[in-house]
Image (tube, rainbow, N blue to C red):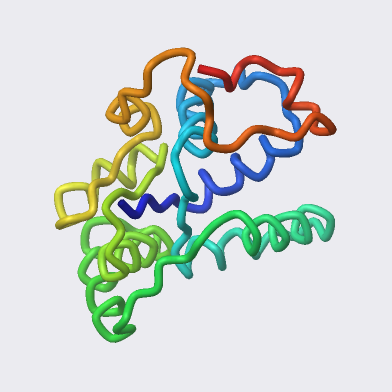
Length: 173
């Protein structure tokens, strides 16, 4: 199964891998589910070419370098075989959603064969989920619940002892 993520999700995972404390903002449940998905899911999450490009528009040089390193080493990229079909599909989405990057991210996920696109962007989901064809657009909490991982299961990936996350418990299931 190919599980892709939009740029907001990718950025949170990269930030979390730096050892952040438990999320407590309005998206805390989504972010916790997202990071658990990253750690407990066998293999890796995928980006799309556009979600990766969007992440690489970060202005802060240190954060940009961090994103470059993590995107290269920790995420696969779905590769749509036909850019003309991606462009046409993204164009068709613009009638329903004005964010061009979102339209391309979904089009690339569909044409690249992603089974799931994770996002916590409510407007993105509301406007385009019904058009996502074989790619399910899900919030991280929805996808995490669908995995039905028993509590106490061992994660596929574990933060190294040198990572501040190793002493945090919020990501453990």
